[in-house]
Amino acid sequence: MKLSDLQALYPELNNLLTDSHLQQLRQHGPALFSLGFYAGSRYNLQLDLNRAHPSCLISDKQPAAVPPDSLTMALRGQLENARLTELELLPDERILVWHFQSEQPRQLVTELSGRHANLFLLDQNNQILQSLYPDRSQRGLRRGSVYQPPAARPLPDHLKTELSHLSQLPADGSRSAAYAQLRETQQAQNHRQQIIQQGLKSQQRRLLRAQKSLAQLQADLTKLDEANLWQRRGELLQGAYGKVSRGAAEVTVPDYYQPDSPLIIIQLDPSLDLASNIQRCFDRSRKYERAAERALELIEAAEAQVQTEQTQLQDLSSLAKNPSDLNPEQLQRFSSLIPAPVQQKPKSAEAKPYREFLSGANQAIYVGRSAKENAQLTFKVARGNDLWLHIRDYPGSHVIVPLRKNEQVQPETLLDAATLAHHYSKADGPAEVNYTRRKHVQRFKGGSPGQVQLSEFKTLLLRPEPERLERLIRREGASGAV
Image 1 (cartoon, one colour):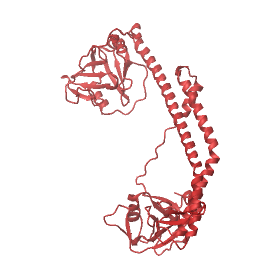
Image 2 (tube, helix red, strand yellow):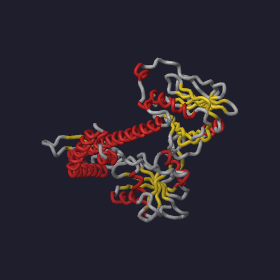
Image 3 (cartoon, helix red, strand yellow):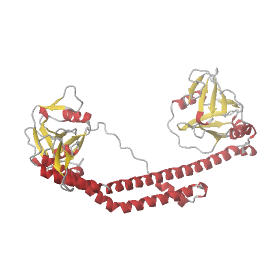
Image 4 (tube, helix red, strand yellow):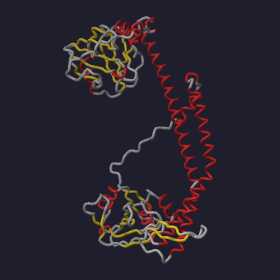
């Protein structure tokens, strides 16, 4: 609240409210109060101590009340039916001191100074009984201490001579009415400016997303050369049968694609046999080739999207230069870009430490989300006869298939569970999956939360099937999982 506006409102507040009785005190928000005074006529004082726009004025408007907090209850107990004997405006300060007389003298100090706005209830010795906010100034004001106003400071010359247009109006409520109208206009302008700024930021984010998508597609186009390289590696490795032992990290082969067929070294995955390494090369080649083909299909549309978002941002930036001239349709363009608030899903009382899937045989499959939740799934959720699976030689999720006593897992469910164990792991290409009954899984002493040791187990070699994985992902959380 500007000092000149408060100085103009003060004579009106003093004239209308001095010697009146405070009959009603209501709370309308965390820092918004209304005080009902009576002195032959009824006056409603609206006291807004919001630190963004504090104010104090006589108003006919009564916002909806909210349940009172402890401060409001204390104010009611100390001030209701008390007589306002004096209203004091501290010199060159945006501070009003309300002097009340009831059984005991009380003072209500309202500091209307922007981000330091606050309210203090004082006793007859100027000791603080209650405050709205903890004191953030350098005065160290707290309950039980003696209230001290801010230290006097020189007032700038422009504030000494500044007069509010309100001072030209009669002090009979007209000043408060005019100030209320001014506040509504300012709030509307602030709201309009906020919509414009939020709309511009949202459009900038849309352009950035479009540019990132285009950059990714442009990067994918270059993967065609990488696809050819992996294809050549796979074909050259086909001539290395009988030359590679299990666990080898590399192999030397002639490069038939170059003149004179020079010898080159091809890196291998030591955990895979030669056939699996060859298949890994061909899988990588197809992956990069599909990425390049997809990029070729989408890049033209992505370029057009970037151009559209750039044009939209330029148009909006031009409109934002003159916010007061915007018509409702133009303002709606900014408003339509602001995303709706995200509705927070209520947290369940006890979140499950696993994902749920449904196998092709309608059998539930549980997959741990992290190392900690792997341990919870294996040692707190799973039962002794449940099937337990984990990718071999790679970090990954624990997978559980709940089974009844003496129940055997169906082959289809076993493959589905192994597919999920592979998908939620660091493995790439064909890999081995260990499986056993949960009762054969023990904690690894001194290891990380999800680290275990097996007393007995079986192993299957899994060749990933994209169609099977896609079906499982579609049925994540499907009803019917038990």
